[in-house]
Image 1 (cartoon, rainbow, N blue to C red):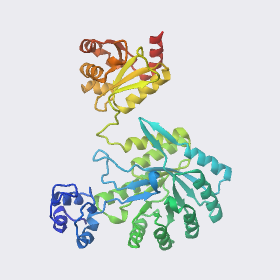
Image 2: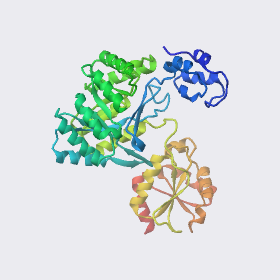
Image 3: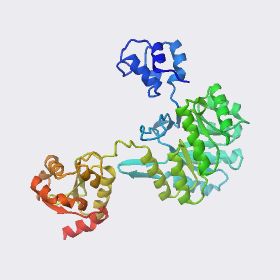
Image 4: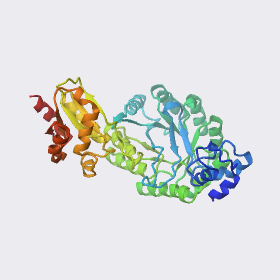
Length: 445
């Protein structure tokens, strides 16, 4: 059981020095008790107090790092069950399985397919994080040969999957700099796996289809000095997997049960890409720290990455672009001027359709606090007055020779008032962004 805020406060220096970022030691203690800050932010705490407070200050789910450098993957350290309570901070890692018994040409092809799974969506780069190499052949040479191919052709983080300590030890010599996740520890090989993970400073994944055994193994590994643990509750049906992942998360967060205070990994089971994408999305939502898929279809990966992007954004702060003028193409003084909101999805949808129309245009993004057109209009965040103010403050009058502005068709009702407020001639554009290319080409004629 964790210590209360007052119990933690009694062990702190009580200097109120503010170096921790909080106004008083009591405020800092309360944040430690709530698992929202770590003890290391206090520069004056004694070693004796550190030992007593270690359990209380440790996050309910450990932060585990896989890989190194800018591409490293950090998972865990979440503090709530539901994203409406607080933002989820460490997005689930998305990876793909490569079996070492595949022909070399197929391994090359799959690595190339995985490497291509990088996209830009609503102004953010979304991409996969991992390749999981599975020692399906149970042959060390096959495993090392495939690993050399992967390390040569990819910079993605690695999950090395084998229950053979000898095979993983040889693999570490090839990929030690990549700080891989070692997957394959179980009740038969736990002790040598823990030793290997400690020697190589690698994170270790423990597997068991029994949650009771998984708990005991995690506790034993932690007592052996390994804190960078990942839990694999075993390949089960989707329903059973979600039940296990939810139970592990709930025990860690609600009951402060330390053996389950680690991120988890899950593997999809479906061979059909459509079903696998749905399965992966479910596992991301409830509550896998890493999801490993088999298929590498581009559309499938984009769907899964989009799901992750949506789940791991702040629900109280919609993705927004900077409210300003955006120039699309080689604009001139005669180029059309469109207005839209600064909700990222809305803006980038409009931008892509303007680009598709091949008519150089200005887009003015109006500050709507990240709301879409109709939502912002209903909330009075996208009004004639706001648009008129944006037209004036943006400086668009100095860039074009005309005074004609195009507004979204869904808010055509404001056209008269906008014309009065701004002095600009108002043209009502299409309701859907898909109609923009034809609309702009029609204006040009």
